[in-house]
Length: 185
Image (cartoon, rainbow, N blue to C red; front, side, top):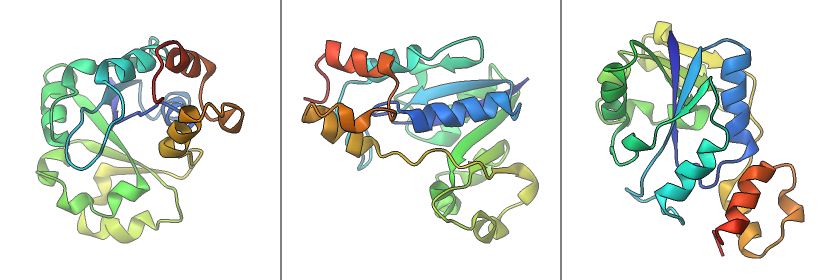
């Protein structure tokens, strides 16, 4: 079984994230997607507690989408993949084209490359230019760009209670969860 591994802050989960997951499943690139929200580390500030981000992700969980909050505090991607290999044998790391630029600098990139890498092409980035450093066999390029949505933009609008400006950017179940739990205010 081919398992997509989608790691991110999902702060908050938005339609662009959901589109990535849906594309992977509907186009049968993978059989299931394991979604892993990351904890707060490095220089990335996360506004809300990990439990809320896990709860929001759980709202989209189904037979093809598995939310795994137990790996959230693992710092490096290669470590997450190592843990998941104990449960699944055929892993496909899902990243955006913006991540391919510095992918060669990721911690233990050779260990990551023991798996397949799915790259969502976007932002006018020539992915192939950066793949010259790697065995291209390990990479699957998806040219169907997800909707480019800024989580920062969404958080700012929520903070100002300007919900109309984010209509269509965030699932109503997620927005209702945010409002109910007074998040991002």
